[in-house]
Each structure stands twice: as structure tokens, then as C-alpha cells.
Amino acid sequence: MNYRHAFHAGNFADVFKHAILTGLIEALKAKQTPFHYFDTHAGAGRYDLRGAAARKTREHEAGVQRLLGTARLPAALHIYLNLVRALNTGNKASDIAIYPGSPLIASLLMRESDHATLCELQADETAQLRELFAGDARISVHQRDGYAALDALLPPPERRGLVLIDPPFEAQEGEFDAIEAALAKALARWPTGMYTIWYPIKLRQQTLPFLRSFVRRKIPKVLCAELLLHPDNSALRLNGCGMVIVNPPWKFDRQLEELLPVLREHLAQGRFGEQRVEWLTGE
Ligand SMILES: C[S@@+](CC[C@H](N)C(=O)[O-])C[C@H]1O[C@@H](n2cnc3c(N)ncnc32)[C@H](O)[C@@H]1O
Image (tube, rainbow, N blue to C red; front, side):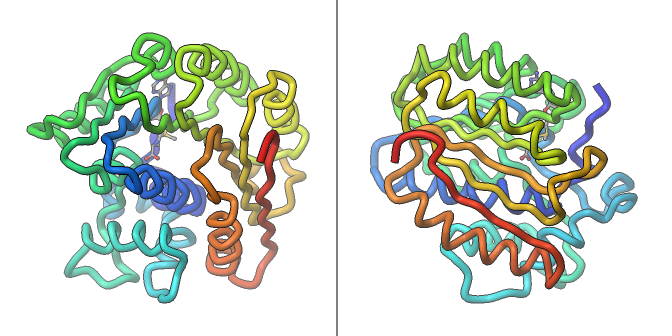
């Protein structure tokens, strides 16, 4: 396994994913009853943008950095950017040093009574997660396969919550098969859970069987959002990305319809950009 998220932290795909994640967690907080957050592919939790990996690619400069100076944003984007700003007090918007991964974003949004389970396969990333959340009794960190963990740990005691599935896609299209299999088992154990899956868009035809699988498997209530910064016709580049949301919160499609044009405007900066919000099943 070669993938290291530190090379990509804060890029356009992270902004898209983490703004939507923030919206989903905020929606869970609309009810007082506690929820459980599962992160199947957690990463390190926190990234040093001045470290060697981030300095090599500088992907955050065309990602989160393009949004930090902006105002009057949709609620989820505003909350997410405030979390990033709070981790970087003392730094200029054009020179941030720390970027939060999904586990840190979730933990900062969670209340005292909410809990999280974080799974990560790589030893050094898991060690960083353990250090980051040492002493936080709400959070358990596991060095294990995130897909197998879903099968073992669902449903959570709270019976409400969110699963983020955010794999590195090193197996390319094979990853879609792994997601489909894990999701089918997870839904059988916990049909009312909310699930969100991030996926890359390179060649359009690579994503179609995955998106059609929700219809084929008759999974009800599946929403899909996509952001493209390049045409989806090259296998060699991350042209865009998408999130599928199973059992989304009420009216979340409207939130996405407000959020995505703003993301496109700031991330595409006058170049090619497209966004899409679509119900794959249900509504
Ligand atoms: C895209 S990164 C995760 C980023 C993180 N979710 C975030 O948004 O900050 C994918 C991570 O999955 C880990 N990984 C790969 N295969 C895994 C598996 N089967 N189970 C758990 N983690 C895995 C990789 O080591 C990598 O850290």
C-alpha cells in the first residue's frame, strides 16, 4: 500500500468531501439524541501542510486555500472553514500550516455524548490517530480493515449515525466492488444508518457501474453529488469526484444544490467546472 493522504490534504477533493461531511454531521446534531460516527478509512487525522509531502505537491493551494478568504458562504462550508481557521490562528489565509482530516473534523463537531470509531490499516497513520485522540473517551481507534470493521461493529449502540467510506482507490475499479460488497452487508445489519462514500472521477464510464449498482440492489433513498474541475475523459488525472449518500438527512439535496455552485466557482476559478446533484433512487 503506497497511498499517503499527506500528499493530498486540503486539495479540492478534500474540500468537497469535508464540506459535505460537515453538513451531514450538523444535520445529525439537529436531534439531541447521541450519534455514532464511523470512519472506515480514517487516515492520520491531521496534516502538516509545511511537511515534506504537502510541500511537494502543494495541492492545498488549489483547494482549501482558495476558500479561506471568502465570506457569505453556505452554512456547512462556513462551519468547515471556521474549523480550519481555528486550527491555524496566527497564520495568514494564504499560509496555513495545519489541515484537519475527516476524523478531526468529526471530533470537533461532535458533542460530549456522541462517539466515533476510526479504522485505519497503516501503522504509522494509526499511531498518529492514537496520539491525536489520546484522552478523548468519545473516540476509539482501530488498526484494522475498515470494511471488515463495519461487518463486525454495526449497528452502533446509539442506533443513529453516519459511516464515511473514503478509500484510496489504489485498486482502481476493484475498490468499487469492495465498497458494494461492504455496503450490502452493512445495510443488512443497519438499514437506517446514514452512509456516505467518496469516489474519484477520471473516466466517466469507470463510475457508471458503481452508481447503477444502487438501483440494481434496490437501495432506497440514495443521493449523489459530483464536482468536476476537468472533463471526465482522461484516465490519468483526478478530473473530479463524487459523494454518494445513502439515507441522507431531510432536504439535504437542497443544501447540496446551494453548496456545489459555490465550490465550483471558487475551486474552478473561471476554468472548466461542472457540478451535479441527483437522486439515484428515491427522493
Ligand atoms: C483517502 S485516505 C483517508 C482520508 C480521510 N478519510 C480524510 O478525509 O481525512 C485513505 C486511507 O485509507 C487507508 N486504508 C487503505 N485501505 C484500508 C482498509 N482496507 N481499511 C482501513 N484503512 C485503509 C489508507 O492508509 C489511507 O490512510
